Image (cartoon, rainbow over all chains, first blue to last red):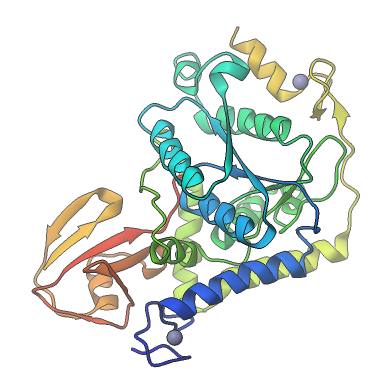
Length: 287
Length: 64
Ligand SMILES: [Zn+2]
Ligand SMILES: [Zn+2]
């Protein structure tokens, strides 16, 4: 099987490309997404939310390449045997590519590691997600954009999950760039049109050292079901994930609903849906 | 054939020669979820593998 652009052996099937042409194709796709959706302005200060995994590491590498100065921001939830390992990969990567890395931990910022919190409470993903979002936003203050590693699979899954759960308000988050809300740093997703498989192939071909390791608290059985449905469908109808995202973007353009205004937490002054924000309520519940 | 499956961190033995896509079908893995590597080279679902090859099936799903 040969590359559709040269005589080299293909390493990827759709599109059918050799190593060099695949790397070019992937980088161009990310670059075009940044341009088309105006993800970055020339002098924007950018922070990349990093986990040490393949997606955020790819974003870090490509924004450094396309945009220049970027800072890596990582949250250490305190998950032994998992986050300590992925953070080592990230440290090594940042050192090699001369990127500033800032790490903030649950332990220092909210008082306990996630491992400790889970001795008192269940639902790791909801606790973890609340504190992660809070800390990322807090430490991205002063930057113009937070870039995340969300890829096409993550986004198509999110659209479908939000529809199935009736969380139609959350469809607004499934955008390559989030809307401006006072108190929130705008999020951008440069990998929005790259499939999980494309990102993994890019990481392999570029020899980035990211280990395969899964979070021990992963409880995403619903997401896994949705992933299977989408991937089965993708086998039969090519581009079904891309179609979901394009349809969602079209829909959002037509709706242009006003987002519910945020209030600001009486304790920490961060944006909140209620008088005291979810983060502050959660911190108190652990005291 | 020796087949290392990263997601379950196990190596299995199978009699197989043919296309990668048929190999994946025989172990019930959706090609969208994995990359297949032989001798550290990325290969596609349309490539042929021999019974004497050893391959790695790498997961493309991120751990978060
Ligand atoms: Zn080529
Ligand atoms: Zn608060």
